Image 1 (tube, rainbow, N blue to C red):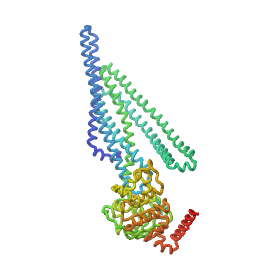
Image 2: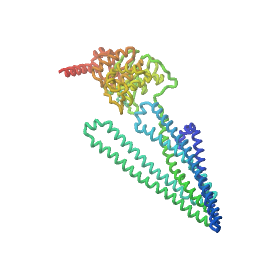
Image 3: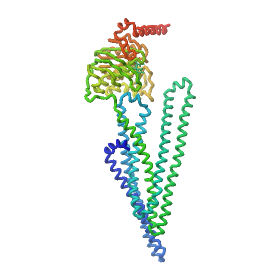
Image 4: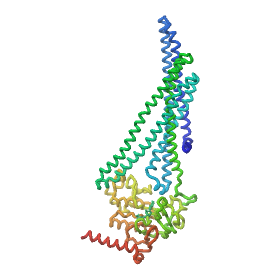
Length: 601
Ligand SMILES: Nc1ncnc2c1ncn2[C@@H]1O[C@H](COP(=O)(O)OP(=O)(O)OP(=O)(O)O)[C@@H](O)[C@H]1O
């Protein structure tokens, strides 16, 4: 329960809705508990006057008596109808305030969770499964909403209604009250336990459902591989197995559900029979009137729902508390990468210095960088080359503070990047990642993603510099073409170039290209490098690559090996060192010659 205290701030925020909701609930209940009192009065009136009426012999007098009686009955009938309407109206207002409040809280909570996702660093995302993260913002929040909305509303109704009705019943006859109420706690307990079973089964169904979803999702994404390896039938069997488990659990839940309503009806019936039996004896004994008996039967009927809700509300609160505990743990998670208290926003010129940097990926223990040293002067172009897994991407990730090194410092213009505001640092470094990600939006909006104010001309220019403008203009809708799931599928090379355009449009002083030309052909690569040469003239640029761009006059080329610097120098210097670079260059030259010879032979 203590976990739910975290939601109190929302009750304070929506205190007027909350208090009004409580008031409407109380008014609606007052109007409904008055109805049995009127029924009692009608019954008592009938009992007292029918005897006299039957004894009358004068037909004229009988007619007058009957018409007076009809009017009284009509008056009572209309009064009951009026009370029912008023009670219904306030119930409507109660839902309009309390349930609407719960929707507002749900909205706020989802936003709070989403903002926390955005604050957290990459290590968190590596250590948690996407499914778990998704369920926090959907499943857990909707369970918490059930507590702040319906559960709270029914709990309030139950308490007010029980207090008022039991008090009214007690006033009439305490013994009969105790007898008639005796089966109801049993009803509450039964509902509670049945709910617990239903909850357990629903949880299993939920996890089987997410398993089915993942199987289906993986099949959709991998459909090309499945088809080309003719694995449709085994995939279908795999899906069927997951589906079978889900079916079995659903049928079992349906059976439990089927027991639910009859069990309730049995308990209610038991209460009514007890009321009529014991109440009837009390009427015969002259302790209560027949009107009281009718009033009691109605009260018992009115009480069954509140008693039923006790069990339901209790299990709802339990579920909400478990969900809120998960949400609290998540919201308390501190991002490892955040602004230092005195972090400054600095305009970067472009001097980059890696000072004795070592870095280990904590969750795997892999050491990606070891005592790495590198100084890049403003405006210099540096290539980072190395075998796969040698730490090139890690270097770029550390520069934009996706992670902080465990040892050493990274300085830009002499300031440790940990003393800079994160937004200022990342805004002034354009990073083209190795794995391209385009949003389900237009190409134009994908390019201006980091620069939303950029106009169409700037978007076109960036696309031109990334040598993708011609490709885009060939699409029927040009730059307005939708990409992503429901849009056009761009080729790997086109995606890479759109991703480059996205980085270029921001026009910062420092740029990092992480192996972002791997999917373009040699001619386009040459064209882009030509464009970049002019574009990067006064900028600091780090170009991570597998291939040697001999056309690009790098100020420095670094060869990384197992996280450390293996070779460093200019193209000529490295060739004369006869190491990995020289070997790679020789291999590349032969490869290129072979491919050229091949294409012309
Ligand atoms: N997010 C991560 N979590 C754990 N280990 C990682 C992570 N990213 C990379 N590594 C590991 O760190 C080492 C360096 O990886 P990195 O991606 O920096 O290499 P790279 O030189 O960029 O490789 P490639 O050329 O294949 O992209 C590798 O052993 C890799 O397995």
